[in-house]
Image (cartoon, rainbow, N blue to C red; front, top):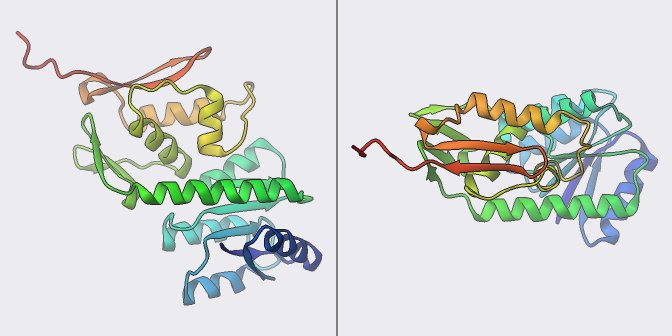
Amino acid sequence: MNIASAEDDLAQGQLLQEILVSAGHQCTVFPTGNALLAALQRETPYDLLLIDWELPDINGLDIVRWIRGKLGYTIPVMLVTNRSLEEDLVEGLQAGADDYMGKPVRKGELIARTEALLRRHKSEAINESAFLCGAYEINPAATSITLNGVKADLAPKEYELALLLFRNPGRLFSRDVLSHSVWNRDIPATSRTLDTHLSNIRRKLNLRPENGVRLSSSYALGYRLELIADTTSNP
């Protein structure tokens, strides 16, 4: 696969390149964020982007937002960062990053996360047809979920979480499965990240029986999107 990295540290960029090439990928390293953006404006031949959060010319989150605004979700993005606070990492994911990993980069983790993102993106690309679930129309190609013709205003990870649930009505998902499917990592039980995202999609999508669905939850067992039978014709 063809991977691009925005990394201003020469040694770090060389390390990333060597690791990815050893795993059978091509890797182009850009020393600035603007150099990467210029390349993306000329063409988009990359299968994955690795972006340093703190670059000398432009913030990594601004690069992610530009990519999502101009290119949508056609390319998976992973942030590479020294930051470890939960609020920072949540901000990165909300900006549109698919995953993140900390520095210093570890070879095995980089290869595993890279290949997991590429697999997930390939799997999602195969199933791009719009479908209905209750009163909702889900269009993966447009990354949209609409209710009564109105598109819901969902953050990137909220959309991914909702899409997973809509694609699997009736399936019980544990917290661990949801964490790995959407964030590609464990989320500690003490963290409110998953609960906050679930609360947001329940509210933003108005997941109520009158719309044909119900989001049920059990902290011990997990979460399930249930389809509600239409009973309006019953006497």
